[in-house]
Image (cartoon, rainbow, N blue to C red; front, side, top):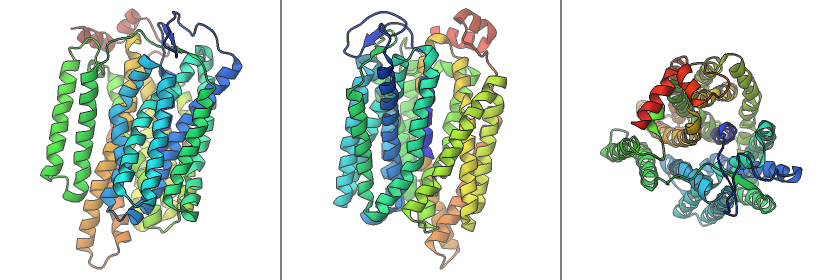
Amino acid sequence: MSSVSVICHFMRTAALLSLTGRTVPDDGSQSVGLEPPHAPDAAVKRMAVLAAAAGLSTWAIDMAATQVALPSMQTSLGISVTASQWILNITLIVLAGLVTVGGALGDRTGRLRMFRLGIVLIVAGAALTFAGGLLDGFGIVMAGCVIEGVGAACSLPASTAVLLDVFPRAERGAAQGRMMVISMTVTAFAPTVIGVIIETLSWPYAYLLTVAAAVITLSLLARLKYAQAKLQATPFDYAGSVLLFMSVALITVGVMRGGSTGLASPTVLAPGAVGVAVAAALVLPSLRKQHPLIQFRLMAIRNVGIGLFVSLMRFLPSVLMGAFVARYAQQVLGLSPVETGLLMILPVLAQVVAAPVAGRLQDKGGPRTPVSLGAGLLALGLALLALGFPGQSLVLVLVGTIVGGAGFSFTNPAQIAAMNQTPLDERGMVAGIFPLASQFGTALFVALLTAGLSAFTARFMTNHAGASEAAAEASALGALSWIGVAATLLTLVVSLLLRSPASQPQPKALEAAVDPAVAEARGAAGR
C-alpha cells in the first residue's frame, strides 16, 4: 500500500497547489498572465492527463516490483533481512532528500524537462537493477535503486503539476479525477502482473515492466507541448537543499543500522545525532532567510503542524500494511508472488472507494471528522494485523489491510486543512513540504520496522528454542503492529485538535482576521 499512498499524495498536492504570477513556456521564454497565454486545445489536455498518469504509474510499477520481489531478492542475492530492506529504503532516502529540490528545479528550468529527465533516470536505474539481478550483484542493484530514487525526485513533482499548467482552474478537478482513475487502476493490478513475471521468469524481469511503462511515458511526453505557469522566480536555497538531504540520509541510515546492531548501538546513535544536528543547522538559518527552502515558521499554524504530523505518522501503518504484508505473505504464509499481488489489490480499491467519501465529509464539516475517522480505521487495521500475524490468519491480515486502506484515504483532508489555513502566498511552499513528510515517513518507518523485526525475531528465537523462523517473524510482526496501534491512537488524539477553516481562500488581511494563528505566523516570519 505504501507505493499507492505516495502516488495519491502527489496527486493531492498538485490539486491543492494554486499557481499564480507569470507564466513561462517550457522552452524558457517568458510571458505574463495568470493562466497560460494560449488555452491548450482538447488534444493537449488529453495528452497531459495521459502523460501525468503514465509517469505516476511508472513509479508505482517500480515500487511494486521492489515490494513484491523483495523476498526473492534476499534469497537470490544471499543477503540478510536488514540488507534486503536497504534495497527498498535507499530509493526512499534519495527520494525524500531530493524531492523538494526536484520540484524547485522544475519551477526554474521547466517541468517537462525535469519530467523527461526523471523518467530517463528511472529507466537507467531499472535497467541497472535488472542487470544486477542477472549478475547476482547486490552493489549493482543498490546503485540502480539510487538512480531510480533520483529519477523519481525529478519526475514526481512535475508529473502532476503539468495539469496545473494545461488546465484552467475550473477544469483541474476533473482532470485530476481522470488521472487518478488511470493511475490507481494500474497501481491496483501491477503487483499481480509482477507476481506472474517473478513466478514464471525471475525477479529481475519485473523491472522490465518499469522500463516498458517509462518508454510509454516518454512517448507521450514527446507529444505534449504546453506553456508552464510558475511563480515569480526567487533565489534557490542551495545550502538548505544540501542540509535537508544530509539530515534525511543520516537519520534514516542510522536507524537502518539498528536492524543488525540494535537501536541503542553507537553506530545507530552517532549518525542519528549528527542528522539531528544537521537538521538544526537547516532550521535555524531558515528562520532568518527571506527565501528558505522550507519556511518552518508556518508550523506555528495549528492545522499546518497537525497536518504534517498526521501525514508523517500515517506511513507507519502504511508501511506495515504494504511492504511488510507482502513479505509476510510469502515468507510466513508461503504464498506465491502472484497470490501476494492479488492480495494487494483490495487495499488499493478500498482507498479509491474511501477517497471521495472523505472529501464529502471534509466539505460538510471540516477535516476533524474524516481525519480522526481515518486514524481510527488505521489503528483498527493494525489491531487486526496484530492478531492475524502471529495467528497466521490470512483473513484477518487481509481485512486489516482493507480497513487500513480506507483509513489512509480518510486522513487525506489533513493536507487540505493545512492548506486552507496557510497564507495565500505561502501555500506552494507548504504543499511542497508534504511530499517530503510522506517520503521521509516511509523511509524512516521502513528503517524502524526493519530494526524492530530483527530484534523481536532474535528475541523470540532465543526464548523459544526450536521455533521456526516463520513463527518468529510472525510473532515479531504482531508485536510491531501493537506498537503501531499505540502510535496511531496518538495520531488520532492529535487529529481531534484540527480546526475547521473557512472553505474558500480569503485575502491575506481577512485570513489574518479570521485565524489569529495565521497573523502570528506571518508576523514571526517577517521578523
